[in-house]
Length: 107
Image 1 (spheres, rainbow, N blue to C red):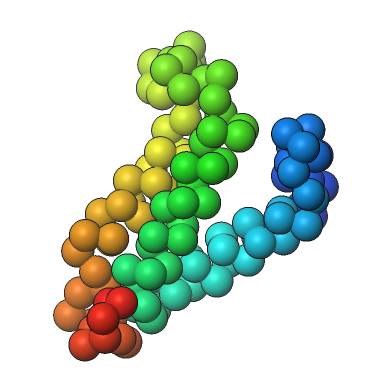
Image 2 (image 1 turned 90 degrees about the horizontal axis):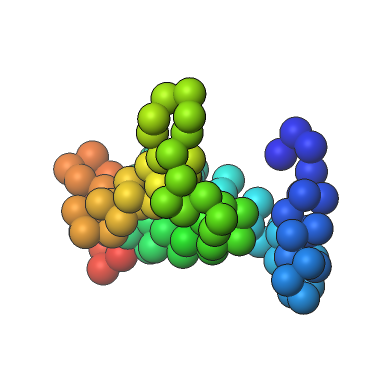
């Protein structure tokens, strides 16, 4: 958000995809995270965030998929993988007891 979507647009155009998709990525990361945070359609929002993180890992971190960080010894894709697995967990468990939409088909 601070530096715009120019970096993502560049990666998308490098893959032959239209650059306006970068705004969808920004929208998913903002709105999807907000929906998950407040418990509004948690499962649907987590599916969208999960898909977004799979695409982000494949686009930006494909070369580092099985690489280790020499400073820490952890995976190079540790942060995106954390968001991906957290979203996957919410896909299966839902928003929980205090979610806004707990009795909906998408919660």
